[in-house]
Amino acid sequence: MRILYLFPEEFPLPKARSVQVFETLRGLAAQGDSVLLIASPCSAEGEKALREFGVSCLTVSKLLFGKAFPVLRSTRFFAKRCYKEILKRGVDAGGVVFVRHIKQAYYMLRENIDLPLVYEAHEIFSHSLSGRKEKKIRFMEAFVLQNAKAVVAISDSLRKGLVSEYGVDREISVIHSGAPDYGEPSFSQKKWDRVVYVGSWSSSKGVDLLLRAASRVPDLEVVIAGGSEADREWLLQKSGNSVPDNVTLLGRLSRDEVRDLVMSAGIAILPNREEWISEWTSPLKLFEYMAGGCAIVSADIPPVREVIDKQCAVFFSPGELDSLVAALRVLADDPHRSVEIARNAWRRSRSYSWGARAEKLRRVFEEVHRLRAK
Image (cartoon, rainbow, N blue to C red; front, top):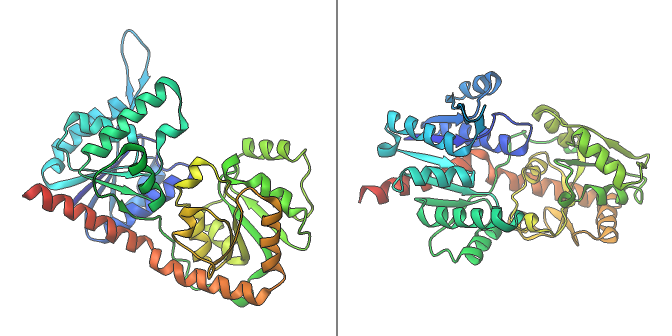
């Protein structure tokens, strides 16, 4: 099967979605499919990394030059150029176009409503907008949900949100994010007094809440990683430029550094606040924590509950400092329980491998082909 993955951004980006795209492409290529990423642009670094796993990479520009303007950057231009590549390669007749950006999906379907396009929803984009922009994106989302040949959601909570928001009367497949294969952790070598957080530091992620909680568990080492320099300034401002002595703030880490950090830590945390984006997320960090064999402390939000339960985590009320501190103390005061929870989380991660995710996606693609052949 020929699979074209359209990504109207630079690849790779220093963001979680690049990891998700890379692992998805690698998993699909391992199924024996012909996989091509079209990005804007695909860097030499990205092209080399993908080539190792049998994935081709093509750069298509989003830029348009003209006399009336020096340069315009547009997803619409990108879509038109991608469609030419699709026709050239015959993917419209014998392949699948896979898209996760709502504007990209919309413009591709406007080029050809019969395109074998599979849309992967990661959020309800209109919820982050207002006014004319919200109205425009709502129209696009409704159009794509109605006309894509298949729709995938990264959590069941998101699937329910799409159905409720748009009255979707069609099947939406739920395929969560994947867990890396770090191998079996050495539980006896882990630092059970080390708590780690890896990811972005935006307000919805609850990192400022974690920083406040850290001051109340001085016997624990708390490592917060993944923030940019701007994130660091924001977090320091929120904390009154005061960081507890038991806290280490790290910037963005390489994938190998993330692996090493979670493999060394006994406890990992998801301190998300109960905001709209947290209603639908399928956070990569959750699967990294599980793969690293960490005992997980998590905000009690529906998308996380879809993947793990109290056998793999200690839950706390989102946004509530006392509840978070109490959850940390449960594990800090009972190392044997921490080890048991960590082992359960690692075992659970095996059913969420990137390979298993690729197999589920491929079944969706095959169903698209079956229905088109009728």
